Image 1: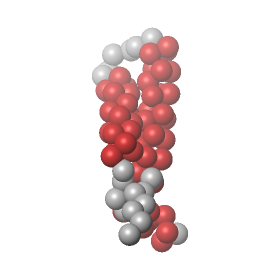
Image 2: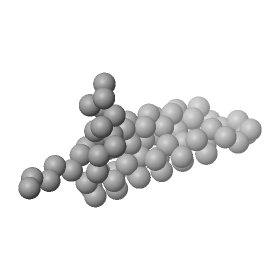
Image 3: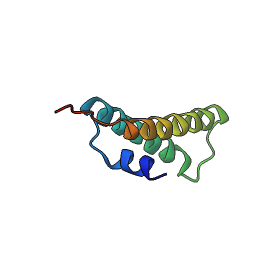
Length: 71
């Protein structure tokens, strides 16, 4: 268990930091679709739900990638 915590706290490569930020943006965009009290078409809410899942997975996987610097 501590290996996972250490892995999440290690330095993340630049490419995966960019992917993590894109994932966070997707999750935020989907949250913005769900936030207003207006009834939206079911297709829009379905797509927003898929974006939320994709953004969450993308962020978690990207954060777990670590920079392996051999010295």
